[in-house]
Amino acid sequence: LKIYEKCLLPTAERCFIKKNEDWILQEDNDPKHRSKLCTEWKEQSGIVTLDWPSQSPDANPIENVWA
Image (tube, rainbow, N blue to C red; front, side, top):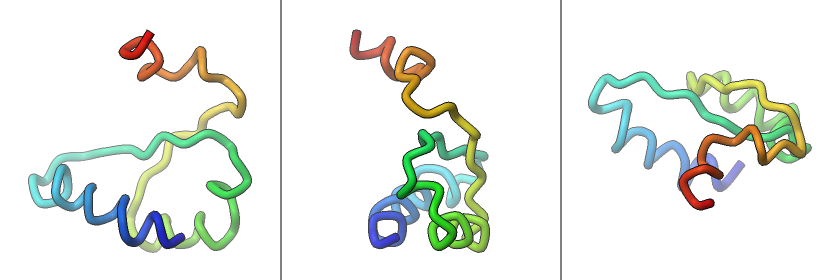
């Protein structure tokens, strides 16, 4: 939760929110990402997430950038 609060949200505000741009957070199904605490915090913070299958790096678009 600290990473979301101290890193993710300030970066999203700087890059997207202040520019009125839509954005979606992509995370895998790691238990840390799907915990009740984090899920509720993201919902309360207005963060839209994309459901993503776990253990599927081949479906991750960023992998094509670094391949």
